[in-house]
Image (spheres, rainbow, N blue to C red):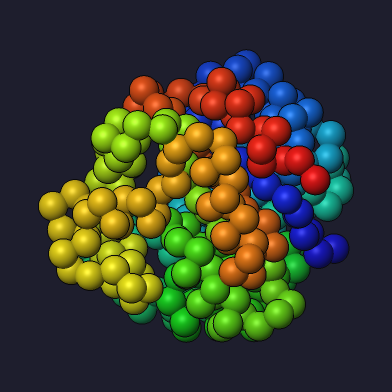
Length: 292
């Protein structure tokens, strides 16, 4: 069963790692507000349980991993986990799968992170062989470069690029072709003051600018070495993190759709820099992002 969420969804680490009771309340509210999907990250642990919490709290929203770290979950466990979710909530779970980063994977076992494209292809083979398995139309890849996008096109339902601009969305659609699912993540700050908004955005970007996968992709899509240095230029910050009022943020989301996205998952960065559930911002943005 191919899952093709439309409109706009929410990507949130706090929906995975926040207070369980508040997560349940927030998930139900997000669905009622018109957000059609909920995406959560993975750093190991019970990601299937985290997906189940969101599924139980909602009635129809797509619930997805953005991304499931393939180094941290066996294909067998993932297949069994998806089958269990589908038994209670048929056809609502989409697995975004990624190869993570050498900085993280090599921390305890130096040299483990090698040939990520080969590793991903092997993991997809394991998902195909597992019983129960994970069908190709229930998985997407955290793909940035052309070869991983091609693998997404050939072996999965599509791609879930993270930390990208509409220009990358246009590039990705060109590689994928017209049919595969393309679901970019877009970080936003609901803050009209440029200095304040960029301060929050730079705090968000700091981790990613230390990771070669993301830096290389930024360079591939038109940014320069100067843009990615010293915390990121204003050009980089503005290109990757949308900020401003509701209209400005809605315009960035429309730019992704115009570039070929099927669905956009929005990661709202709290204007005060806090790490909790940005429920006030979600409420404020909902009319601009979910109408129609």
